[in-house]
Length: 227
Image (cartoon, rainbow, N blue to C red; front, side, top):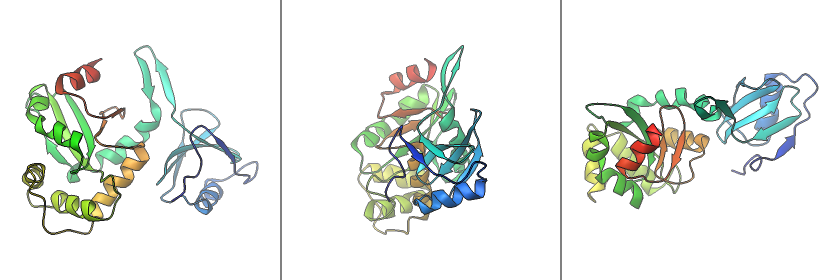
């Protein structure tokens, strides 16, 4: 599906001086967006638009659409406000995650992963080290080839298994599922990853909704989380 707009560009929508949410939604649907949810935004004069293609911001009069991230400046540093919109959606999938809990939990991260990804494999080999540092790892599926096809079917078999932890551990040892399943769970995970702007794996999401792109060694990830 063609992207609505490229990063940091503006698109005239022209739905009138006092555009309703319904009118704005209709206009966006004509541009190819789906699963649209319009919310208030932290900036006066803008509406938050959550769609299958990510997060956008629309002017209240419905004439302009902006793509990008909103950051809040605080005494503690910069906070990514945009991704926090998606944290509730992410946590709603908790029952579908494959979780490796830390006994003395200090941090919880969610990792969008692909069973064909070398760096995901490297991360998984060190699960115990992350856990020993107090980091709980929660996995969501993000097949880089898309939400359909062989990898997606294999990942569905893993995430839908009676014992997903065992199934994933076996897959990481090279014992991939022989039976492919329709990627219903995987599709949900994949679409959420798209909304978070995941472009590759592993992509790590902190409990605050911040995105850490790429693999980090256990000690480096702890430093990033506590920095």
